[in-house]
Image 1 (spheres, rainbow, N blue to C red):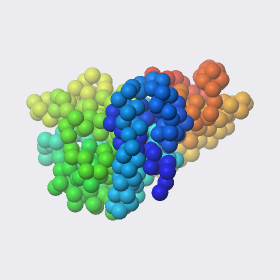
Image 2 (cartoon, rainbow, N blue to C red; image 1 turned 30 degrees about the horizontal axis):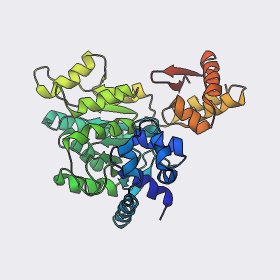
Image 3 (tube, helix red, strand yellow; image 1 turned 90 degrees about the horizontal axis):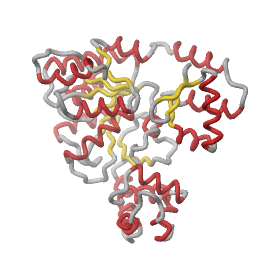
Image 4 (tube, rainbow, N blue to C red; image 1 turned 180 degrees about the horizontal axis):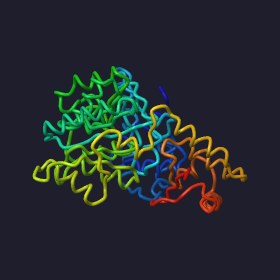
Length: 372
């Protein structure tokens, strides 16, 4: 058994310890294993950690629970992916609230070159379902991974269209990996897994769906995708939560306009009216704004332009190369420091110089993105 996963899963099972606190604990202790071997008094000195959490970490049966969880995963052919794993999705990893551990069934490539989320109301109209199917058909030549939530309405329409047209798709659930919800979507979920797609969740085995878990699920959908497409949405609901999170993550959001007298169009129309989403009527609109090409020439040109204008300073070269290799060409300050093993003081000076010379730009939330 992989000890790294044992302790990561154990930490993930500790009540009140989410992704933020788990990473906080590891940053102070050095590893998930070290967290469980750190004396009580030292744990209490870590910010955001109180008496109750320390007590839960040090309880004797937590490692046994983790071992049982891993054994279930092995028996059910489920992968457990921890934040510290090399194959953790790079798009998702940059956000402070990313799940510390998630469960994955299927061989889906979560680091695919292009990813989009397609979301919408559970009470989808025939127009919305038909548009979703047509959109997926039009997206097929661009070969994106399609992310959605396996829910009624637009979500399942997107997944089923992907199965029909041969696109990989992943469903992000709010229940355990062994609890497909709604159960009527089990057949589609199996088809997704067989077709280079998958299903995933941060919830442990046996977790039943709960309304409070769905907003947290939506942040994973937004985090995995380069862009979020809202097909139909009421004035409030999960699709708008996903769109708002995507905007907070500085990602592109697209919305399909609809009948102003129809409840399921209010959310999309408001997103467009409030300049929170690009108006789209076909897949070409998305490809144009996302700068997608069918032959990859645009990306190759971008890479050659970047590497022909590398800065002379070696530390600055490392920063540019790291951003270039990242799918979104964007990383947060802390992630840059962690991945480059570069002190913040030195890194900040390099970033400022790169920004002055036009290599990158600063974004809200202490993030940095390449300009080329």
